[in-house]
Length: 299
Image (cartoon, rainbow, N blue to C red; front, side):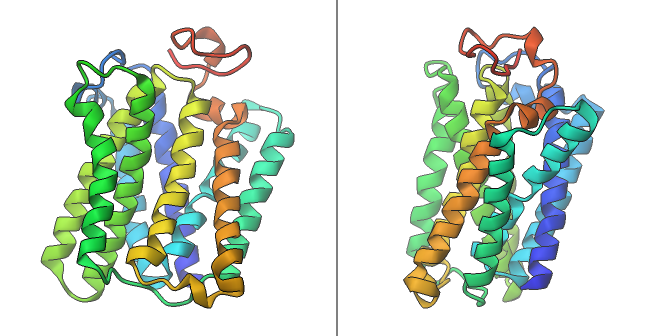
């Protein structure tokens, strides 16, 4: 368990640093009016974005390793601790003040992760229901694919945020399935799930990078970050055999701890200090009239 948490922390650091690099480049890539795969083509010509993507791939590898050592219920909330790194970058390099919202968010994430680590089931569960896995994958895939399939008619940027949230959750679920397949020596299945994780991650990344050009980073991040914690963890007892009922108060304490992590992640995602790391110079740009006074936006 301790080893899994340590590896998950390393993965979190990779993901957050990668996200900063990717989002900085996406802000200058242009073409945010329509959700299209061509955005990735433009970003691939930017070395800093490619470096961020390579760092994210390294984080994914570490996440798979962590999932072989600790339950999904523990690993996914632990990844949210990477937000503390973003806040530290903001306070150190951008000299953004750390206010009450940020303090509460950090406290919620740290306390929630500690609670999860203390009461979570110790068994590393595995997918035990092919039907359940298929349903879960389908439920997450639909909101990811629909905005791409109907991008000419559905230009509401909020659908891109939903696609990003669902895609990141699907990628996390697929990485868990990769870990399970490798653990039992099923290399073919592992490669198939890895391909799904890569596809979901790329679609989620495209949707999120596009959304960041139309919606304030604070609004994008709060939804996506909360979903990254909640959706995979809620799937753990349903399809991955992690028995919450055996934990304190029949799983109520564990559920509260997970909800605390997700709430803290949403608070930090909605923080100007964190958004300024992701999207600097926010005051010079307006997001289609959608920004409220004093709220950071993306050009």
